[in-house]
Image (cartoon, rainbow, N blue to C red):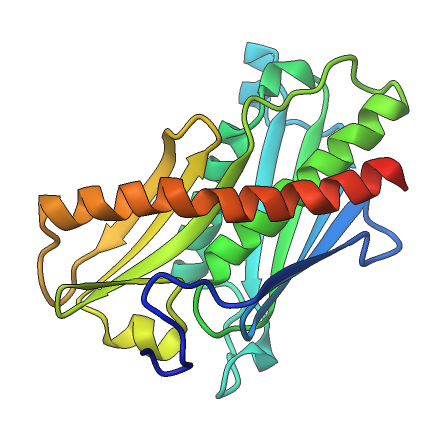
Length: 237
């Protein structure tokens, strides 16, 4: 058993609250154990020049670890680590949508970590995917876009490897003590959109990597079902 009583391949409690804020185009408050993130989506017509040249829209991401989100006050909201995380979130989200189906729009996704206990980037990706689906549904309803740009739903999860044991969804203590930490983004077609890991203490074997990938495909159904639940609440509401 792990430090919080979970089995090795158990998620922490996961939940989403849609339209949490009044002013953004869409917003989602996501929780993953003690990790809490607030994702908001806004729409702009100010596109980067390269998008204008190629005739497609864009999804850009900001990621901030707020000062009181950690045990000791975090004085640096935006730093090198935040920049690396926001790039991963951005790549993952863009891979789920056809940018050519909203050619005149720039979608700004703000990911603010309110409380951090491991898994902040995967909590942001899972929450942001819901927020983007809601935003595009509103754009379709308002006839601002003509087609749903969704390619395939995505979800993210994190793993730690310690003494040869695979741990799904590690909290901060588990993650900081692990031999390997790994983040993966998969889609409903059982293919991989993003894979990122570091083996700071021990190298990751091919066997363990393949095992983690298979587990991620199996466990993704839980996240997809939860995302669908909240998206359907929005559609019915």
